[in-house]
Amino acid sequence: MEWIKSMSITGGAAFGAALILSVLLGFILLPILRHFKLGQPIKAEALAWHKTKEGTPTMGGLSFVTAFLLCTAGYAVFLGVKGRGRELIPFALVVLFAVGNSAIGFIDDYCKLIRKSNDGLSALQKLLLQLVLTGAFIAMMRATGNLETALRLPFADDKWIELSWFAYPVYLIVITGFINATNLTDGVDGLASSVCAVECAFIVLYCFVKGDTDVCVLSAALLGCMIGFLVFNHNPAQMFMGDTGSLFLGGVLMGCAVMTGELLLFLLAGFVFVMDMLTSLLQTASYKLRHKRIFPIAPIHHSFEQWGWSENQIVALFSGVTLLLCAAAYFGI
Image (cartoon, rainbow, N blue to C red):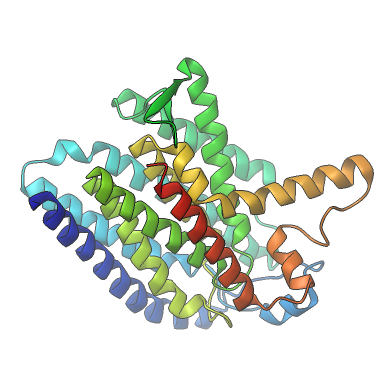
């Protein structure tokens, strides 16, 4: 079919360009970060073997954020030349939303580097900024007719649940929570990059099933960026993405979920991110209420380290679980 051929070319171009650009920009950025000694500070209470990572260049997410922007800008110009610029409104809003989250992460990373500690923005400051940004994104998507108040139920024969006005706080809480979950998952070399890459591959497959070229470009570009960044982020990592990168990932993934109206399906595919956050919340609640810990350390990927798993084994496990979740989500399309 002609649309499949067109989407394959467009998505393939976005993936290939993002992969090449993220690698090239990574090679350019890495010596700059090292020259200015923009190394990651490590918490005093961190796992002992993580102290050896102190000083590893951070804010490496700038490389793939830039690569992603160049690829999506190229696609926007392509549509503009073809006279289809009006179709870009939700696409552009998602890109701006992801960049806004990256900007919050950049401020946090910058504050940590200036203070030479792991204390950047306070949790409240970061949360308030995220809520304002997410609220503005939801409002703009709704105002432009690109946000539904009904959620599609996976595995339910195309049934939808109408939330009416209640949809807006649901979107606000879920989107902000998921973005923070991607941030928490970035605690082991290559973990967030690998899990995100698997979910992106699923979203690309979803787009071919549904015929959604715009979301295909977004997810294919992010997939290329993640694979390119793993050149520098696999264990032992040469640089970290920092909050600059990890918050960006969540912004793109949640933006794609809103564009497609598949919030629940994409949450299932990315449940490893959610699981990492839930273990942290459960740990905190348990300690405050019972003065007992459920896990040796939270989020859960650090507990696996305590149990003797290597970082590569943890990445393989979490990526494998994400692959299984994506396979399950496929049957819910």
